[in-house]
Amino acid sequence: MGLSLEHTRVLVAGGRATGVAVVDLLLELGAKPEVMDQTFADPQAGADFVRRGVPVHTPEEFVADDGTAGLPEGIELIVVSPGFRPDTPLLVAAAAAGTPVWGDVELAWRADRAGLFGPARTWLVITGTNGKTTTTGMIESIVTAAGQSGLACGNIGLTVADALRAEPRADVLCVEISSFQLHWAPSVRPDAGVVLNVADDHLDWHGSREAYAEAKAGALTGRVAVVGEDDAGAAALPVGPDSRRVGFTLGAPRPGMLGIVDGTLVDCAFGDGTLAMIPAADVRPAGPSGLSDALAAAALARAVGIDPEAVARGLRAYRPAAHRGQVVARIDGVAFVDDSKATNPHAAHAAVVAHERVVLIAGGLLKGAPVDDLIAGTVSRLAGVVAIGRDRQIILDAIARHAPEVPAVTVFTGDDGSVMTQRTGERARAVSATGSSDAVMSQAVGAAWELAQADSPGVDAVLLAPAAASLDMFAGYPQRGDSFAAAATALADSRANR
Image (tube, rainbow, N blue to C red):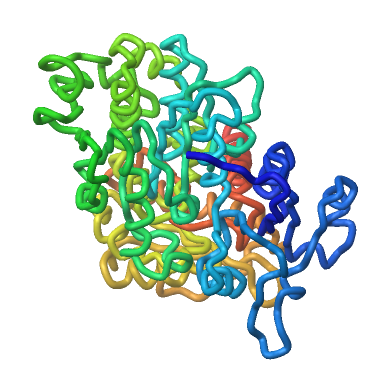
């Protein structure tokens, strides 16, 4: 695949972390990038680009008086950051004019395939509604354990563009890739790619579940296509016409799959017969979702010839990142578990079923995803629910429909700025003078602990698994998790000091 962008005028849509990485790559390739971002209405926001000789624009510069968007004259290519939807007027105009639109991953793929940064790398692509980051970390650990130079990148912090230019060189790119990035990366054909699961998420961006699933299926177009057979959404996806399909399951695998037999992760797809890899008890994080992610990572590794012993070493060495099922405090045998990364109902469901009985703290920005299946599917494990955030009423309505016997409390900021709590069937009451996000979380943790104490079967966890994005109250899911951890720790300390 050839690629020549020398002297090509390229409009980079988005001037933040991804846009910076794209500009760096384009400049190295001899292109002439220009950057568009809403923040450039403030001249200081684009000052770093201007100092490098890169022109900056605001979206308004490309909108005519009648409200339609037009392409900047002379632009031959647009490279978009993942957040730009296909119905963005500028991109609609580009499609009408036949101007190509690539994502940052598409640009990096083409540059790598063209050999512009040395021999083409091995690409292992990971996507799914949930578990992407854990699986990506696992496969990076396995690659390292196998003595190869691997690097986690993509939707995980380091962009793929930066990974191509990183020193020392990484020969294996472990690419976590979102549905947005897959939509804008139609040429990517990884050495092995996995779709872990598909559930309702980002429907506001894609427009429908079908479009979301179609984007996810882009990971299954390479040499080996790995799918989560236990997930109906993933199992139904088509693979590329020349792709070898490999499944994984938490049960006993059929030939051509990976699975679990007698408490051990096994490979029945690569090699002869059944190859044992690692006891399930050695995998972290524990529970069904952790084991599923480990099987997916093992399948990617085996697809590129990594031996079972290295798979086991890598999985044992892997340590989950924060905010993914992390126990942050304990009170009287009850764990306070931070799963703030559970930003959609599917992830929250997996977090709940990892416990016998929980009080769930949930809510935030649901992004159009329904929570009915979450509540109905976990009702036997719910000792109570504390709803927070902008879409808290949607959660309360689902409880009323599917689990009216489960006690529910909502914590919110009142019109006067005070923090309010309200139990189903009772009047709201003010509990704090401040309406800060931390104050809301503190009251939510306190309310959850009260529900836990009142439950007769016995609660094993107070669980923050919001099923929603965090930006209505926090700067991101890490800050939300930190707020939960601080509140849980403070509650534990106050009880210890009585």
